[in-house]
Structures are given as structure tokens and as C-alpha cells.
Length: 344
Image (tube, rainbow, N blue to C red; front, side):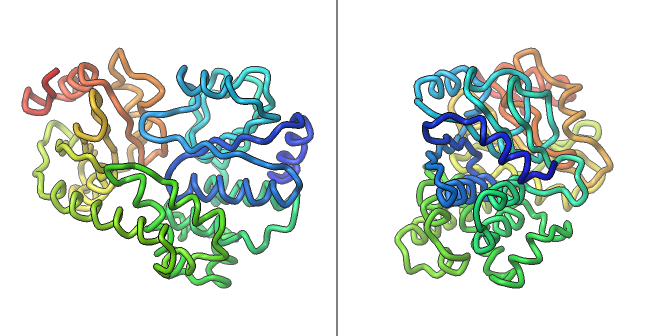
């Protein structure tokens, strides 16, 4: 079956209550949530949205407990990975994702873009899903924004071509950049970004600056830019084929730092680690120009306390979060000395 047919069939098993959409807080995840909510609304299925933030995953006990307290007719989880185990037992569930699967969730319909050529982003899959329920041609810009946010605009996806022709590549890329800023800021509040995606008619409305939500995104962008500039000045330390950049920031700039250094250190696996993003944890991003499967690389070196926050993502772009003791174990096993550990 096609993505749309699979989604429509799964939706027919949902109960009468609202559909709960649980999604990631980046441009692709937010766009997926927006297009699902708007498409389901057009099909007469009211939806609620829960965006997961720092350290949250639908397979964790706190989120599972939160979901158990909601009265819903069904659950759609988008852009948060694919793992084994239940999310909300007893409730029909659809998982929409494009990352490397780490198992199959119990009693859920999985719509995955992993291994598909060209690989669709989660927002692209979401658009294909709701297009089977109601007219959604005007919402293709949300898929295009998610594609730009995941830097998949060169992949050859037809949704990108459609969105680019109708709304402009420059506007889509600019909107994706802005939508990604709140989650990277020290506050991490993505509400303004989601509100724009739920109500705007296109990407130019997001970047125009005429709305207070856009001004909030611009303020977050300015904060992130300043923190990124500071973090990029930290020199990497080397051990074997790994380059490690360790710094402390309340902003989520470690993926950007890793990407920048991976372009310069093409013969290394680059880890950018942020000890100030969440108390008690070290968040890190892994990037490389080498022909290395980073998901497998991390899996082979997982410290004893690694959990669902560690090592998911893509072959060339992954990362995770480790408690301080586990981080210290991890970097010591990589061959780094005490300078790269964190005091507990």
C-alpha cells in the first residue's frame, strides 16, 4: 500500500476521541505535526499536538505516563525515531519517521522513509498521509520546509520540487532556518514556531516579520548565533580517528559545531559535546565526512548507562545524551584523558 493508503487504513481503527500528535521539535518534526493537524482537521478528525523537548522521548516512562493520562482516540508519533516497546498501550498508534529504526514498536503501524530512494523526511511522509484524507496541495510548503530543515532539498523529492516552484526555494530555506531557532535557544520554547506553521499560508508569512511569533524566532536566532560563534572557537582534541569539541552552552549549538568541524576535519569522526544544555547530562552530536556508519559506531561504544536518548538518527548524522558518569566512561573508552571528562 502507499503511504496514504496505509495511513487511511490505520486511521479507520482509531476511536472517537481526538487524535494526539506527538512530534519532534525541529523544522521537520514541527512541519510534520502542522501538516498532520491541518490535514486531519480538514478530514473532520480534530487533533491535539504534544511537541517533545529536551531529553524527552515517547518511549520513556515519564512521557508514557503522561500519555496514559490523556483521553484520545489514537496516537500519531512523528519524527521521533522507531524503537521497540509500547508507547501508549491499548491505543491505536501510527509512527511516521525516516531515521534508522532501532526496533519495531509494539502494536503500531510504522510508516518509515528509511531506505526509500529518495528518502522522504517525516514531514514529507505526513503530507503524503493526509493527502489521502483531504485536499492538501496547498500544504505542500510544510513538507518543503521540513525538507529544507533536514537539508534534503537535493535529494530529488517531488514535494520539494512542487513546493519550490510554488513558494520559492529561498523563502522555504529561510523559513526552515527561523523555525529551527527556538528549539536551539536557551529557553527551548517552540510554541511561536508551531503557531506559525499551524496558521500561515506559506513560508513568506513566516519570514516577513509582521507577526509577533516571527519576532520571537528572530530573537532566538540572534541568541543562537552568538553562542555558536563562541562555541566554534573551542579547539578540538584528538584521540585516534575521533575529534572532540567540549564546551558548555544553554543553547543547542552542538549539532552546528559538529557540522562545521566535520567540514574541516574530513579524516575524523567529529563529536561536539555540550555540558551546559541540560543539568546532569552531556548532549553531543556526531558528524563525519568519512564513509562511516555513525549509528553503528556509537552502538559499538555505548556505555553501560546509555538509554533511548543515545545513538539514534542517521548514518552520517547522529548523537545523543549521556549522564555525566556515562559520558566520562564513554570518552575514556575513546582514548581521551581527564580534560574531556566532567566533574560529577
